[in-house]
Image 1 (cartoon, helix red, strand yellow):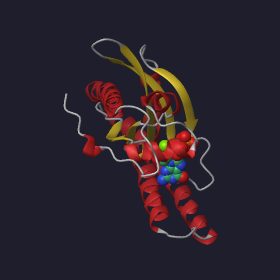
Image 2: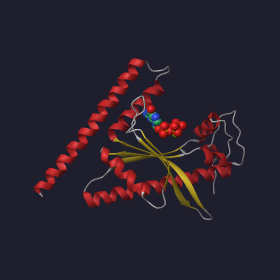
Image 3: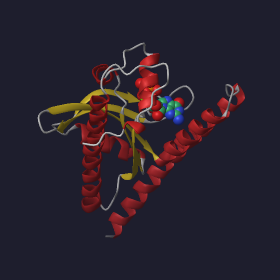
Image 4: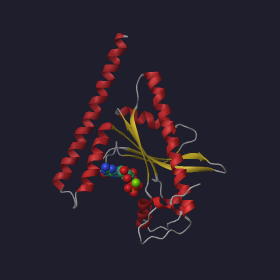
Length: 222
Ligand code: GTP
Ligand code: MG
């Protein structure tokens, strides 16, 4: 196997406490875990399309936490930088974002995924029922998924963020704005951003209602 050490750069003040090979192999396992989750969700989405003529998932995004971010997070937590410690302490190395069409699709997808025998739930944070102070809404899950390797089976954590297109629109722009502003965003602007999040909540609910009403009209005429 070719190991490309050029891909792995650490901040200068951080030492890698073990060989690079183990770390790169670990990255491969997390990539495999993303593929497992992606396939499971695609299968559910396709089943819905066939059975109900509806796709709950608009699209998905995937990311593997960059080695530099892993190192920085470990340092922030005051933890040793080795493959074992990373595996035990970081649950967001593999990340999948599921962007749903309608509000109801979020619970639908979550329940169907968590019902699967080989998936176990580690943590659920419902920022939809309980939005964050700044207005952020999304459902966050950390699940363990088995990855079958040549000599062993690894149970790998994956962070899944599930949200509607509207929630994703807000979160993407808010993230960009936070990143772009060099100083702390003023209270007035934070309030305006929060108010945008509230408008988006109303839009999501209204779109859901319109969808249901159109569906029931179609049923009446069929
Ligand atoms: P981290 O240490 O950042 O991973 O936080 P955590 O373990 O407490 O997890 P949490 O579930 O609160 O959030 C993790 C991820 O959700 C972040 O890395 C972002 O992708 C997303 N997120 C959380 N809060 C916000 C927010 O206020 N705005 C945006 N745009 N994204 C957020
Ligand atoms: Mg994170």
